[in-house]
Image 1 (cartoon, helix red, strand yellow):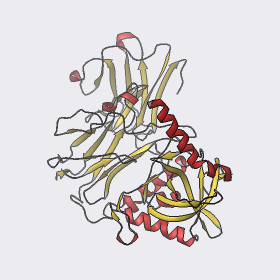
Image 2 (tube, rainbow, N blue to C red; image 1 turned 90 degrees about the vertical axis):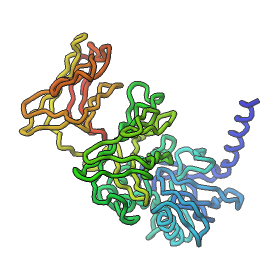
Image 3 (cartoon, rainbow, N blue to C red; image 1 turned 30 degrees about the horizontal axis):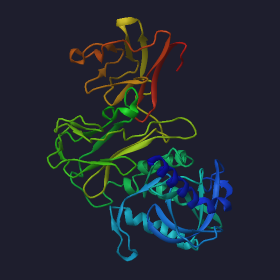
Image 4 (cartoon, helix red, strand yellow; image 1 turned 135 degrees about the horizontal axis):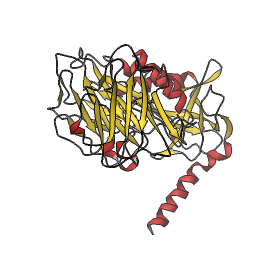
Length: 426
């Protein structure tokens, strides 16, 4: 009976959009970009609900019924009050709503909608890229929102056409410090003078779809003198999931705190998000152009630290060309050797060594002097680490003798060094 009910609901959802299918044409998925191609409709806007949701009357569907449209690939800040004269919500929420409302009004309330799959929905809203007519051509509203820092890039598998372009625009807005990425746009927040760094481990070891605890966000206080109280601050991904720090949380001068996506916690330096499944999407290097971001907001709504991955804009790193890698895959002696070929010391803290599907995360103090080497032994207890020899912590071998790859990468997925052997290559 339950399966029958689910099937019936699916059929009803499909029937709800079938009139739109009959009137669809082919065109660019994202207005202004020639490829990829999508199903395209036109519509009249009935209402602007918030910065990423509108109601429309579809042209040519034979009805005047309003259909709710959710913008593809973007996440505006959450609005709490929707009445046009009394809008309110998170910082930047109303600003995003007003921006698209003005653009839609100037377009005579006419919009262009596009989707790879006409049946794509999110919470019963049709997923579409939305464009308005401006200066004689269609202009994509998602592009405007992300480029101006009024929305986060939110990649989707089902409608991936905007992913590559929006991720670049989001990284450009972040680099320019505009919109959401202006650290005091919502007012001068607490500990405003203390610089903060954030990075996220989005690729959990093993089968990460079932390893929530393998994902984490680290936050470092770069202020050498002042602690930063974190009570009321929150971390989120590009979706709506967020972790709010408890009132007593603090990150000391030069210290680091971790938000574990799973249940690991000590209540002081490690806090549990208590998610049952991973939060952060994995990177793909194909046409889907998947990735994600992690964002730290202060209580006023300022983004105080963030990381968008993978890097697709000005992708450089100080360690490029500074490190070489060698590997010994022979039995219990399995190890990886990293050598500093630069003229100065290098610190590997904040970098990751990968031999898929396993990762080794360098801790503070992982410094290699010029001409020196650091060895990571696969088998062994990390409690036995020294300055030049680290233990990965496995009780068994992980490197494939017939062929494997080991890489040093940034958390934004820039490859800094690689070694391969046998039937594998870098």
